[in-house]
Length: 207
Image 1: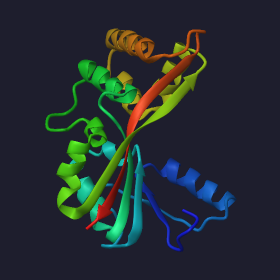
Image 2 (image 1 turned 60 degrees about the vertical axis):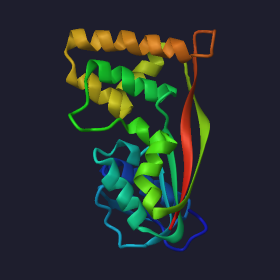
Image 3 (image 1 turned 45 degrees about the vertical axis):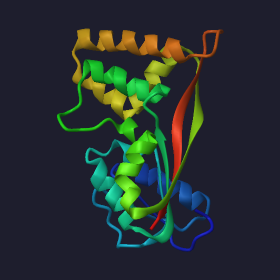
């Protein structure tokens, strides 16, 4: 973000844009922050040399439309950089667990599909000269399972929405399953949480 003269950032959550503006101002970075729908980006065709999304665009309902928008605003020869949770990783399995208690709307694909080479090829293949992808690992660290659950229920969108949509009995069942999943992935043996979650780092070169 420090190397290019024109920088833009978009999100549909005003509070996140506000925090981004504050951070950019503190670091003396000139960035234009705009409220934006990832399926209809408010930027002209071929606006940017680099387009980035870190665990963001993967949550759009219409995956193909969102991918098309990323490609549209990227210049020919430019790069689209993505970090997306994989289906087999911890967050991918979190999505799967939530889906058992609260199935997604009909026709909506799992966000974790963005974390597969095959799905990226489907969405970007016709508009890319190269798609390079490597699995990476992010490590979550929390004081305890209860601390993890409190944070994810309060701040992580998929978990927050799931608990809000369930009644008391459903919430208790989801809590049990999430804590069981956490136990499967936890590497710590001292009561804390150390969970490795796989994601796919992808760099797509625009044709």
